[in-house]
Length: 159
Ligand code: PNS
Image (cartoon, rainbow, N blue to C red):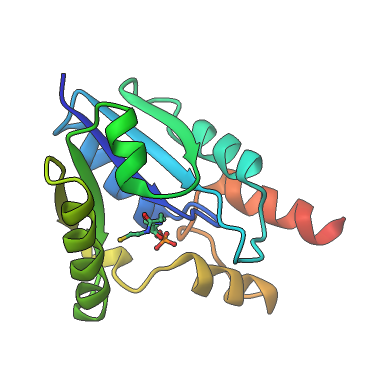
């Protein structure tokens, strides 16, 4: 069984993430979308909320599971019999940092392979941060994130 992990902050999940999840689910027997517990960031959504949104938007993909992790990704990979780390690449600017992480993950766990998937062109400018920025100033984010995410973001600001 070939298991891949797609790790990230997912604050919130965007249609760019969803595109990578869907495409990678066709390449592996199972894809675990793993949300990082990151104490150094102040996120919009809690890890539980992010996982709930991810579950909702991937409910039609049978071989996708949602999980969370803390600490090193390389350790999570080893503990869960994962063979590959899936990452999305948008622009050349992503490359340097992603290369550094892929090489460090290989140093920590020589058995793991990082697989890069090129983002679909329509999402190449998308990031969770830019979506939050546009939303904060009442810009339209329809089509950039799943509708469930827009509803959850509206609920957050009305609290
Ligand atoms: O969505 P993001 O914030 O770009 O995802 C970054 C993530 C979670 C993939 C990366 O920060 C990560 O793997 N963190 C876990 C800690 C770790 O293993 N650090 C060393 C990586 S070389």
